[in-house]
Image (tube, rainbow, N blue to C red; front, side):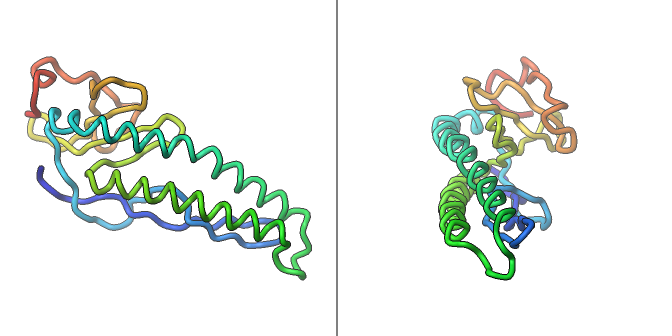
Length: 173
């Protein structure tokens, strides 16, 4: 596998009516170029048993994280800013941070494999690859048995296309 760059995790700041909440948010942003791993189609498919388990953990935790953030925002709307965070806000923030840490640890596992996690709702994962000499993503979605699609680096999920039969037999061009 050739290496080039991967996503960077940042914290997300939630502004609430009465408080400012900084949460380690499970969101990838592409701000700095770092190394990527390039996969043949066969190599990417061989990672799927592990990738499936990690993505299942992420997509199971994400709704809980989102619901906790919503609870915090509701509590903030009812709080008095001059009194700081209420005990309820502090407790919910601690839960948010715990869930976010777990999600981020799973995202780091995917990064170590060389995957790019793209979607909390659908469990989208891309693998850098090459097709006809150009950089592409091999595209996998939670629930799929194997990687059957690819897209340009810029087009995203909307640009998904079936992998040509010539490539589908084993390796990337």
